[in-house]
Image 1 (cartoon, rainbow, N blue to C red):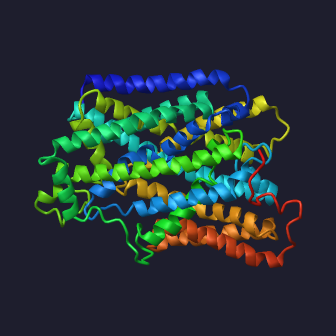
Image 2 (cartoon, rainbow, N blue to C red):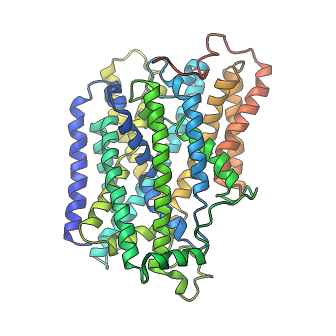
Image 3 (spheres, helix red, strand yellow):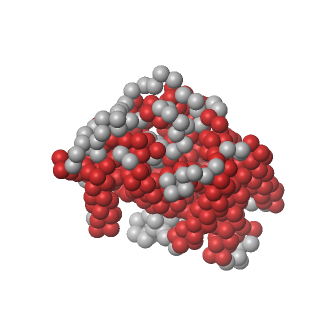
Length: 507
């Protein structure tokens, strides 16, 4: 990388912060700050969903999956589940989001069960999302560290990584503090276009740099079985199988896209359910194409670096040999082998992905679901001020998570999705309870969530069950235990039983 790249990177970062500040002039109410006054077009929401799913973690980690020793296209089995999950959400959940004026998805749980369920679900979201986005911040800092060390090879990579975490975290905080959710969505639209263009450019450059070109890359990939797509085994310890992908991926998407404030908040930025459904289904088609493209970049990198020609490749401790982990393969190519100017633009888009954070969604949840119940008589301006303060606080928390996680070698994608899956199962389960088990009241629902959390912690720490099954298992336990426990309690009042009932709204 050259000086031009640094100018582009830091100019882009400064521009993003100023962009957020410009949007800040419109944030007069909490509805403006959290939902963009419900006036965002559906296509922008669709691109925002794609950008959120792609993020820094996907952009960097997915090529590493195909690059790794034994890596292949079996990750796509999970994406097929993502598509199925979107259909279920469109039919089951989205219509209920537009009954009344919601600011967070957890307010539905308050209507159906009561305040305690809402606060438990909201708290789980806040914990999980801060951990997941702290990991995303760490991965982005690794890229910035690689950029700097390409200029100063003698620099201490550890010190640079720590400094990068703090720098990017502060930029993320300032941007989100002023811009609110609408700024996040529009930056994600811009960011998506930039890094898709950058990924296509990278694929072309890698192909031209391979000795023998595209045909050699295909031959090498075929030799090492990189295009293997389906695994129909019933091994619950394997992360990517057809059944884990279809069933586990469906339930994972139902949780992340159907009951997680981070993504549901984007639907609420439109003014009617059909626009939200169109945005969600459109995003699925784009995401499938994206993941195929990123996996193919990993195949091309496999031939570009040709690690299989090195002695000891088969027995190397790192499956991403000669790199310490798969997350470091694509950043190395971007910073060392892409033309000046283009590499700077791609890295800048990666940084923008880190700043399109969940801080606004976390603040919305913390204020509306955890703070308002105890301070219910305050003005909207008071809640807006608290939202800004909490944006600062949670930004600092995510910086701390990134610093604590920086010595782990596990794939960032694998780590972030496993943590999200661990917590999202109990939350999805209570939404399913509210939808299908109308008799269940708040106490048995809480018992179901508690049992699910306990079992999932045991599975996470004491078993080898793949994370792709976590949401399915966690939500099933919540549903079953709550259903059984309901016979020991009075049924829910009839006025609450229809709050999560499916059906297309007339809006």
